[in-house]
Image (cartoon, rainbow, N blue to C red):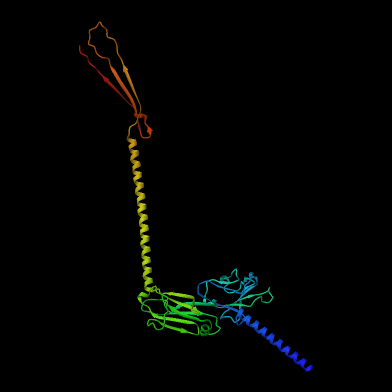
Length: 362
């Protein structure tokens, strides 16, 4: 009887253990579904060098005071704290280019190839408390295109390098297999360039995620564009365009621009000189007309006051005498004044006396 009871208790314990195992497996499965197999949310972000990027913190709360951002790049074995308690660390690298968004995302301006790597967003309970949620990891991939030649001209062979800078967790082949990432070149029409095209030589390196394009430039290649694209599961994530700028064409354009600038300066100077000459001529004509007007006014005689005086003298002849009758003397006098210029000259007063004698017959 006692043996049966012990066996029954043993079976009950085994059942309870099995149930606990099932519960634990369920929790692990649920955790894997929510946060991934590693217990951490992870996101891949692709960006071209020189642009701005936003790294999301999927675990963020409404308040960012508990948010911390850490960076782990290829040059550092340990993580570097960029944001602590929702504030930027003053001694952190790229301090001036970092900012925290309202949703606790990390914003980085003017991305360079030194920014690629792993960024981890963490939520802490106070300064010494435990984590509130699992880490959110963001892998930042930076795409850059460079050329083997600095002087570009027709007839030269040029090689374009397109490299995807990624966190060195493994080889590029591992990244391609796990995330479905691919690199390739396309022309201006968006057509993918392949090794079957005799003009282009396409090669790739699985160790560093590099794809190269080698071709001999033609005269008509000036301003031609080739674009390097990166896709994740057949979806274009980012791209970089390389535009051919021929040195000869650039020198010709520079010379043409210089000639146009010289012609413009000459035209402006000539216009200014003509305007100045016209102004001087107008002032001379105006001055000449003013002088003629003053001379005319000075030569005109102006008579202010003219006085006429008439004096008549007569006498009665005696009837007794039979003599010839004659008129007595009549004198006319006139006094006039003239002005010379603006000032009066009293010495120029003049007088004239006219004497007329009339004879009468017997």
